[in-house]
Amino acid sequence: MKDEDSGIVIIGGGPVGLVAAMYLAPRFGSVTVLEKRPDPRSRLGAVGRSITVMLSTRGWRALSEVGLEDFVRSICVPIHGRCAHLADGSSHVTPYSRDRRPIWSVERARLHRLLLDAAEATPGVRLCFDQQVREVDLDSPAVVVGSRTLRCRLVLGCDGAHSTTRAALVSRGAREEVRTLEMAYQEIDVPGGWLDPSTMHYWPTGDGFFGAFPLPSGDFAGSLFMRLDGPAPSYASVSGGYDLLGMFTSRFPEPAAAIGDLAGQLASKTVSTITIASCDRWVWEGKLALLGDACHAMAPFMGHGMNCGFEDVRTFVGCLDSIDDTASALAVYEKSRVEEAKAISALSQQHYHTMANPPPDKAAVLVEEALRERLFDLFPERFVPLYEQCAFTEESYATLLRNDLLLESLVEELLGIHGPELVSAPASTLRARVSGAAAAITKES
Image (cartoon, rainbow, N blue to C red; front, top):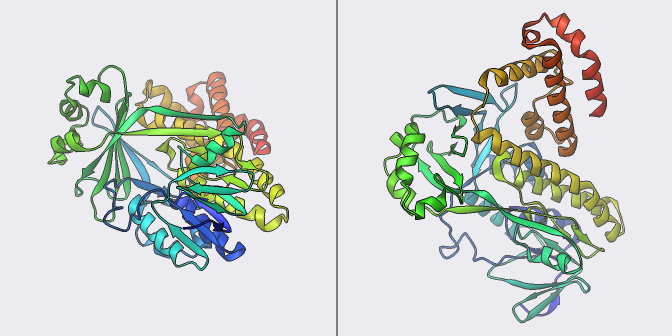
């Protein structure tokens, strides 16, 4: 690599950076992707982590537009809902959509390798591994790799939560927030044959949970989420002698009985932390833009980090396609995505509490859920479950969050005025009670 004009430079060779390269090269010419790690398709670059990622409508739209939908779907598993296994021995399945449409689970490493092959085969795309970017020069623009400088006309930061590209914006006054969540996790291999393979399964405990995602092999990719610090149970307490195996066995007896090498896995598997990040500036003049985790690394519990990143790419390219002036295009991109990222990040954090905490007041929660279900049935065009809207539409995340908060207020107000008996009221009575409020919510959306 030598000093040269490299067209568009993308820093970060993860899924978002690769999809961006495949969008941009046919439209705007040469794209160079710089990845600090070795090529993961080689033995040297291979990683042991097998964590799964979710693909929903937003992600499929991008993959379809770069011609990869069928290839990716062939390595995915359809998941139709999530099953909560509660401490009293009961279980509860929540469908992801009312018409049983699935979201799709895929092993991150397999998806990454497929995207690398596709990007490498795209005319105009050059993949460069083992390239640690030391500095981003916003004024040129240019990137410094080792002792070499690559001048370019546009820099895209797709380099994750600890983004070097974002650091260049921070050096010019942008404000960032980067923090480690209080939760950490270990990936645990779970054999199949005892769980429904069309469902994601989880065991909530209030201060954490164990989740299992189906794999194409029929086995499951498990994840133990637990507090990073603090009193037992936490990963910090394990180093002080806390019995992690005993905790797992007592809190999650079903998976503990099914995982033959549980003790060895708990003792050897890496404890990984979760970093979330945000930034109040995503672009610099017409020279640099952030996409994906570089500007909105979020908690993984809604499964939308990658889907949101792919949507960033589509929006970014759409702005470049429709607006001649690059600086104006980047400004429009930033304005259209910042609130979206804030909304889905908030929803992702909120969904953790949904999955980790068994209902504190089961009867009250069941009444609220029952009333919501009746509203969904009676007003199917006006009221749609939040997860279903996030996963199966491309509606604005910010709008969906606002509407869900309004629906929550409506349910609380109706139950406060009319009591739990409203849940079993005749359809005509319930329609009369909510028609005015429902119309207001529809107007908001």
